[in-house]
Length: 253
Image (cartoon, rainbow, N blue to C red; front, side):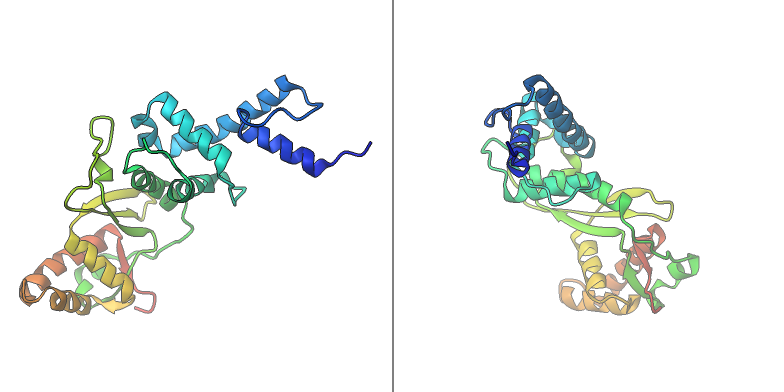
């Protein structure tokens, strides 16, 4: 008799994903299938645990198992690469996860933890500025480094842990800059709404001269802040960001 391999493959995958709702395919050894299932699940579970250590830590063993099992059973990954599974997990949390007992900050925390891995393996190779670039940043054309990401979260994700589990959205968002430096080390820096807006403007006006982007910022902040105050703040901020490699010389600079 002919075997419908496609149907058999679907039965095999269904059991591997969700053995509580799908039986072992006929003519296959249940013990062997259980072993295969455990290997597959443990690979995914271990990968998620290593990429989302804080999320793993704040959940009980049962909560974590239920979360990873639901992801394993429900989400149809679109990539064969293990390095992209963390991004698939974010997609699952944002678009498929349905559990009333979840922490309200779960997606933001997971995104915050994913960023470190994403930046560490990003293929971009920025050309960082030297001391002359830092010193003359007001006269230089500048760009946001492709491995520097300004981020805004409703919750203070950088503080979340077993001893701090906020249940309601704070009055003020948390602003962060996550960046990879010239030594390929990833850093997290908490910042202010003003610096966050400055980085947004630099990203929007790629290749702009440093002094010009400060003038745009000053116009936005008028009349609450006078231009000299904004320019002084801006000079110090641009120099600090250029020194860290968050800002780099524009490609045509």
